[in-house]
Image: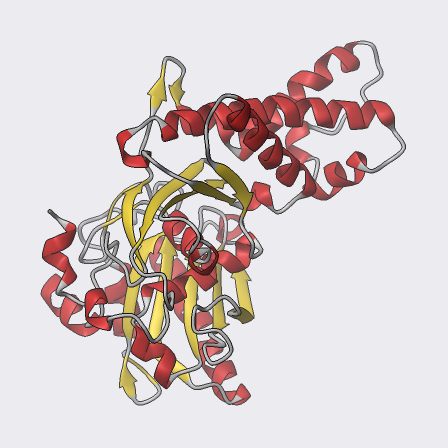
Length: 376
């Protein structure tokens, strides 16, 4: 499908837009380097596992490693969380040592972001990603905040409120214009990652909370594509199958499902829906000039209900961060860090405070009118 045709079909907003209904996206996935490489690599899930391994080495040499022969990258977060409240003081000490060192790294990386022009005057940072979904992650975040404040940085560092898996879907609501919420009670959302693809029916609960603070994921399906190693075409085919199944489920449950799909995807998302860079962990070549995911999905699902399907795709870190819009109305400038395979990041400036993503917004500001502004 041609690019011009795609833009007409979506009819809502540019993909990867810098101006969204409730916020301006000031920066997405900025890459800061030091002598050792990308700073984000120092505050990733893999970095924590490497730190844990280093703390285990001295004990392993003396035959006193409380985790035995289990590789550090294979120990589950659930196991590590249990250790934190368990009776094995040596194991607890090892995990706390790893948390402390990781928190120091996270604080250092966060400082570097705060010192950048794009993140100037940031008042609050939300931390999401899979690492946050654990007690050890929450402790590391809290410790990093204390370190930052002890060094004079006036910024709050808080765990994302929704479960990170749900946040990646709920955030898609904030890509949509206000008429969606007045006419419909749910949308389809997709969160694409390097390991999994998750799709869900997101119930807006707009009448209960016009700021979307009470939105919930009614149902979600997960496909661990990393296990299957599919081609790009097979991955898209499976994604379509999942979405069609959810459309049937929404109809069976009596939802008024909007003709809208919000997509969170790794990488730099261009206005036409193509991926400029950063999609190297996805199955197949998603950065090809001949591939366009929104266009492929519209071709496969041209209508939802009796209306043409509209799709908006944005960076996955941005979308996860957008789930926090209702809870960030006490500040003007805020950011998100997602601790996963790497360290996703985005910085936002609030545009409207009175009604969040609800009735008080000017929905035209989420339309094609925005296109010129985003490039200025």
